[in-house]
Image (tube, rainbow, N blue to C red; front, side, top):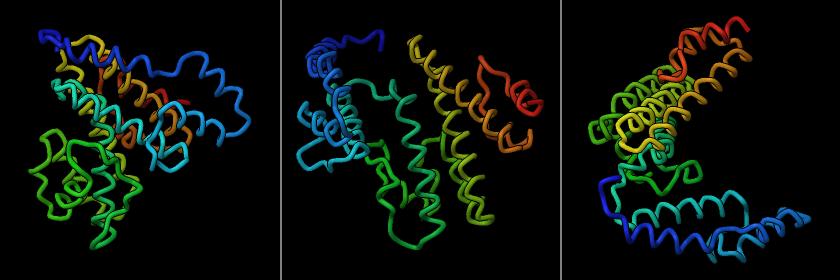
Length: 234
């Protein structure tokens, strides 16, 4: 990314900056009396599409899709954005595993992210056929283990833990491999904050140290052993 000329990409982003919400619009949003008024104002400013349902989740989801569509249109190396795209991709894996283990056909559309490198339909087909070799190497092993675990134990929480841990590992590995300091820092902070949140929740729900170590990912900023022991000690 650093060694590549991104003249068009930079110019396109600079042009799009003019449509960002400015201070005047933010003040208008703060002055709205209801959430409906807020959503209407956002739609007037170009958020969502004409056929996007008038609710916050749908509008935000469409805006996120627009962002990824724009990035792909720029023709840049998409691997640069792995640290940002992995959470949605692994979420779809989790959703597909649960769909595959609980029903013989069909898909719960409302639990999938549509704008991912592997489409929800393809992800579900991969899981149902148990052809995990078609997945990226960084997620294939976790996918197989989580699928077998849920299929035989019906322990949805354990399945979630496995996929969430694999997500953190993937984000961290992508960050470490990046040449850009900002991406490395983002991956480091993302994993560290996630580990801290896991430790806090585990302490409140009286989880074991083995559970915490299985859920947390290693990173330079946080020691999993020390964080687990600190959580247990209260």
